[in-house]
Amino acid sequence: MTLDPSRLRPATRLVHGGVQRTHHGETAEALFLTSGYVYDDAEQAEATFSGKVEHYQYSRFANPTLSMLEQRLALIEGAEDCRTAATGMAAVNAALLSHLQTGDRVVAARALFGSCHWIVSTLLPKFGIQTEFVDGGDLAQWKAALSRPANLVLLESPSNPMLDMVDLPAVAEMAHAAGAIVVVDNVFATPLLQQPLKLGADVVVYSCTKHMDGQGRVLGGAILGSKKWINDVLQPFIRNTGPALSPFNAWVLLKGLETMALRVDAASRSAASIADFLAEQPGVIRVWYPTRADHPQQALALKQMTAGGTVVTFEVAGGKDGAFEVMNSFELILVSNNLGDSKSLATHPATTTHMRIGEQERARLGITDGVIRLSIGLEDPDDIKDDLCRALDRLNTAKPVLAAN
Ligand SMILES: *Cc1c(COP(=O)(O)O)cnc(C)c1O
Image (cartoon, rainbow, N blue to C red; front, side, top):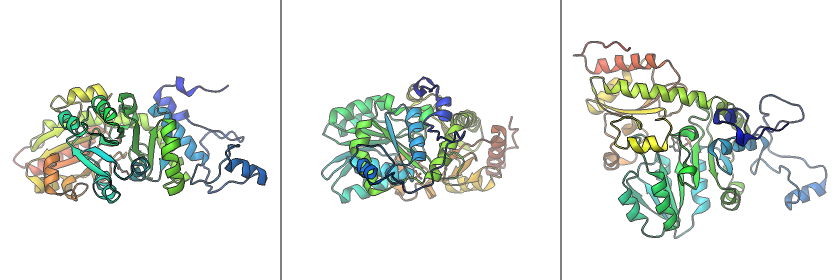
């Protein structure tokens, strides 16, 4: 009996999707830690290379453990096909460089992950590819930028770290009319909370390092799209430039995916309740969380996402000193620039992840010196609230200690 994975619900797809069991009948996915493959004879090798026979050739091109991960990711995303890469940035880079050529034009939302920003603003111009940046939430700016022909649109929604939303169907329609494909970096939402392909995007990219591993162990990246685009455009680039993911890391990611629905659901629930909690605390100037009533794009978030995600951003009084005071007072929450981990992590974007973009660009994005990005983990949310309470109390010693519950 064979299972039809398209009939399965997301949590089940994450456990069973893409499994290719060997003749040994193993329960867990097999780890094919092999660089190459052998043929029965020279004729089979010839037939493989001429495309008459399907046979693994070399793990830079394809590997059975990677294939399982790619099929599972395609199933959970609702994409025709998927390729993986060694890191999220290798995935973004492959998606852009495989599609673009000299003279092409990119339109990108300003609020991009730092290295994505570097690729479009520093690397692509070296090859004669220009990028116009827009404020992702402003459809008038998208309209103006896409009134001229373009080749590729790159955006993140929700964005890092201010959780700005982009109206995906509206931007996709304008992009397609301008001749561009839409590439969405969907790391913050995960495929469980938002599926950009259903909202008009053509390609979705992930850092699997974040929620897919979800336990801070391995780096990985993924690119999802149509079979035709992946076969014709992406696959030759990956095959010949070699950003291949290690089979071991692919195996860790397969095991990470098995628990992703449980983890993202728990962390997202905690994040929503922590966002509400933070908004009530003295010393907190403002909280950003996509599904909160005070988020300027709450309606859009509720339309595009099934929950607000695992990241809460907030601004404390006292600027950088205030933010550092709070972060240095945490006993449970760890100071780290990573996110999507089972451990709650706090980042000061202005001095770390967004230091290089400069003060002016930070101001445009609303990243003030008092902003702290909080990636919520799998701890009991009341323990996280206790830790926040303790730290905020140190910031505002005039205030008596608040009960966390
Ligand atoms: C982490 C991250 C990346 C880069 O992924 P790596 O696995 O670190 O290379 C890209 N985009 C977003 C939104 C990220 O959070």
